[in-house]
Amino acid sequence: MTIMKSEILSRSAEKMMLPVTLADIEQAAARIVGRVTRTPLVRSSSLSGLTGQPVHLKLETRQPVGAFKLRGAMNAILSLDEAARRRGLVTASTGNHGRAVAYAARELGVPATICMSSLVPTNKVEAIRALDAEIRIVGTSQDDAQEEVERLVQSRSLTPIPPFDDVDVVAGQGTIGLEIVEELPDLATVLVPLSGGGLAGGIAVAVKALKPQARIIGISMERGAAMHAAIAAGKPVSIREEETLADSLGGGIGLKNQVTFALCRDLLDEVVLLTEDEIAAGMRHAAHEEGEIVEGAGTVGIAAILAGKVRLSGPTAIILSGSNIDPASHRKIVDGAAA
Image 1 (tube, rainbow, N blue to C red):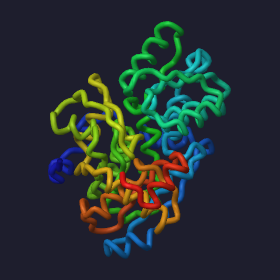
Image 2: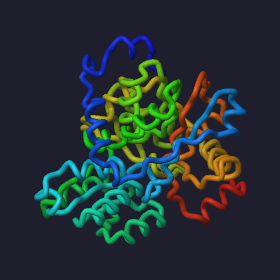
Image 3: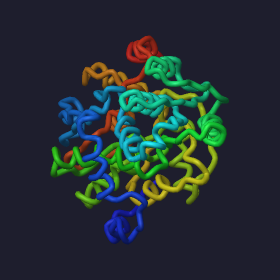
């Protein structure tokens, strides 16, 4: 799926009436400063040599919760009034967002309940449990977990913190884009993991506002790529959630999506899908060549380059979105186990 560059450049964010603006992202950056980590942007000698272009890695793996999700969760929670926070927070998660909400809630002294499906890896569940959050395992999909969130909002008046389809969450994730452009002013391309669209949409808003010619390429897995299916259909659609090495990219985008579908539809230049073997190759490269432990979802940018599915022209940033993978599983894959 490719959106014509001429179409993107002919419309400003204001003309497109995008639900998140550069101003929202700049306000988020001011709000979360000191509460999240400004992560390193490091040059990859191996990928730069392979592509003939300067390739840099944005290490969101260095966040305190091991993933970029802390940016959006912290911004969303800090944007609430005190009464909403004190009622307690609730969210649905494939793991990383739940950990981010639990961490931010503990930092701010408020209770949190995290709803997840049985597909969420045990290591991610236990990491959330260690942050003293209440855990609910419900059903076999993100949609099942979201139904539990809605029930708890009604029965216990908890305050929901959506995993991606929320202006404050997206604005928080978009702060990554601000940092990249500041450190790499001649940026040409960003390779970003694509799931519900909070990360890709937020980064796209920031980068397109500051560097309109830059390309934003969303990368997902072949097994249950919800946003890709929605963009192809022209509207949010239901998809079957499947097991994948990129488990953090699983789940639907919500049939009533209000924020991220529009952002990804209008701002992404291309969406690339990867096989499980290609994702595994990205994980191995991250470990052997970059010295980074990265979960499957976090290595899709690397994997897309290795698979020859993206062509680079100019300075490129790859988002390494998370490091939360079970160590034994990671060793098996890095040692060459089949995907």
